[in-house]
Length: 477
Ligand SMILES: [Fe+2]
Ligand SMILES: [Fe+2]
Image (cartoon, rainbow, N blue to C red; front, side, top):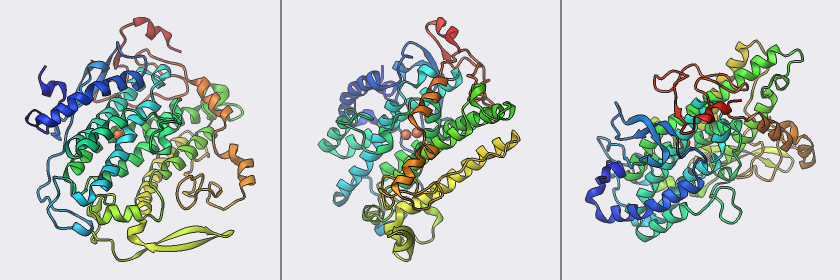
């Protein structure tokens, strides 16, 4: 098999023997990790998956039924832009860097490793979900997200191997050794150690946590370090689908819950076999607040340094006129004593919060869409994003208690109301109890509405998964 068949790429891998050696050495460890920690139980089946084969906007992906063990994880950088000069920060206007600038080596490596670590982490979190897929369509989408997170790991490992020498190789190994939720060797960021073992969590994760990924990738996509900018630009094209899976997945649960609630004599979805709308709100509260933590602390010298170094910009940095962000302040609200007060910090130190602002606006749009679905079923119930201070474990508001509308409260009062606002163990059990596989083409579990259309022009009842054991289809709920 030719190298390009083995590792599809547009980085001229075959011309770079050293890099090729490093990657072909890493590949068996990756495959071993995929076998141990990747999706469980579908190795023998043919899944209708897209594989990235180029960066050509017109046709960058190939769709076919493949076994996941035959999947080809490739390495692609977007084409360089016309004028490749640095857009922002203290190095604005200088030519972009194709090699790591020595003075920023540590900072850049940390940025890459932190992003890279989330990719295998989410695959580990979602490892067992296939066993309870609510449909063949959803199973296929889950596995698509999983293989693409694997490819994102490849993209980041390529940067580590090509640009960071021995340190990079060691980091690439460590990426395969940490384990989501393992207390001895956890993944780097807290959200990526949370359990994602039911489909409501999965869809909330792909709505809110993958969306954090989108904003992180977007801010790296203008990095002065060109290989990182180009790698993340291409990752964003795949990420869009992950966000679709989340947003439309929750929307379909919301639709079914609202329909069942409207039909039930007591206005409850669970006696009808659905998920209560209140439960959906509590899962939303949990995953949204946890994902807000991923943006880092509000007043951040580290964010200022990464921006100054021209390594990490804002979301859509090209929107701004001023790419130095030296002028101006950002006003944060913070608990001072018993009351909320304001705190002014220089704009550059507030860039995590600026990125979080963009994220929050995007999430508001998503919730508005879900609420339209509820309204269309004739219900008054509405979902809300909790206030950004609610349930935070990182940054200014960590260690303090706030209600979902952002009001400070005593820890005891918060604890008393915790189960009103966050899923309890019992509630998680009741959601889990609904999770039964439904594998027959075109059939869907009762707690989720079917999608409007299938994937890439295929019908909803297309055979997205061809099971090697046809009996599995018969296990439909
Ligand atoms: Fe990713
Ligand atoms: Fe993703």
